[in-house]
Image (cartoon, rainbow, N blue to C red; front, side, top):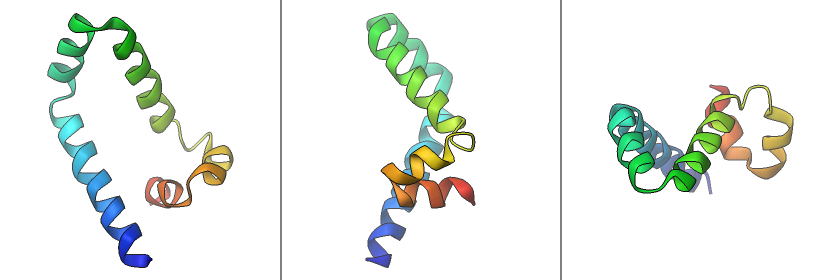
Length: 71
C-alpha cells in the first residue's frame, strides 16, 4: 500500500514536471483546438494550485494528493 502511494505520487510529480515544463506550449495548442477543454484544464490547475486553501475539502477526496501537496 505504501509503495502504491509512493509510485502514484512519483508519477504525479513526473507528470506535473512535464506539464510545467511545456505549460505555455501545451495551453497554446489546447486553447487553439478546444477552448472548452482549455477552460476546464485552467480551472483544474487553479484548484490544484490553491489546494492549500481547499485542504480540508481535498483531504476528504484524496489523502495521498493532500499529503503530496502539503510537503
